[in-house]
Image (cartoon, rainbow, N blue to C red; front, side):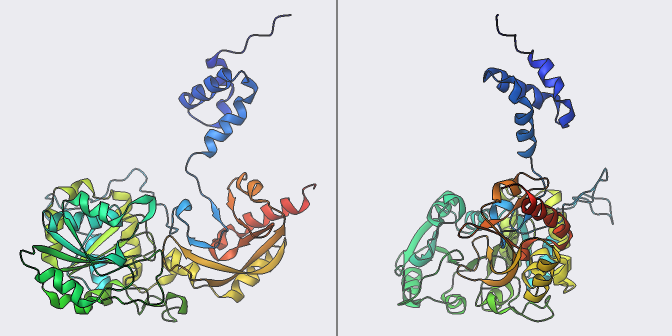
Length: 423
């Protein structure tokens, strides 16, 4: 007998309507299934298409700033059907600037004259270089010519801005005289001195570098890319002061006080906000950046600015508990152990969380979680909501430092299902 004809694309797509996906998506799913000669696979293909969409995830990895999971946990801003005063002055009704709200709050929080928000830290560096040093020289230590995420390298970023790189010193040792020689060289045309924090690696041993205070005396503006977004080394938003694992991480307030003319940093790392980049420091230099044509191309949208405004207000209230990263990072091990025991599944184990996101390499934060023998990570990811955990020597570990307490019940159900599942 001839094989039955497969259903039409439209019929198969309509049979998947219960998935809640738009018909146009289901049509594509149906086409793929029929083309593969397996129209029976359409439901699983539709499920896979739905799971590929952005959705909430329970982060049980212990990586606080997990790049694959969006880095810092932030509340999703839901404006409903309302507009916002993004670019209007409610006082006189005239058009305003989207930089008039969040920027000043961040400037106040880190002791800057002015701050500008763009869409990420790499954009902040590009804008600073293009606005202040195009067709001029930028002096950088060879030990700071780093590669950041996605394969972008400081020399390449600098070249795209139109500035000319002048390398000084060596990979492990750069002295003040190296910078001075470049600045004072005959026919030198130095637009600025750039200091880049090597946030995602460490050079140890026979090393030497030059601090911002010494560089500030050379003449050209000093721009410090501090990267991770620590606003103030004193962490006044934490009742217990700076945690020991924070170490010597450079902070915006102290870097500016030491003599930097500008600092650039990320919004979604230690700042604890959405993906963004911040330029803060001297008002005239920030104004020059804001006036550059690239500023429009690199500006953030209303949702990012609204989320970042909430974070900035929390800093000014000195309320670290309102900032997801700091709330999770400073939980006591005892509280995590108590939560682990209350889950009622798996065994309580000590863990070592890490900041992640290219910050504080080598730093571990004592933590606690639950463990189950075997690799159950695929089953945990297949749930709704997905749980992302880690495997250590064929043991699945769920580190509770990065799990919101509101998700504990969901995690308990997931672990209970695994514990009772047939082997």
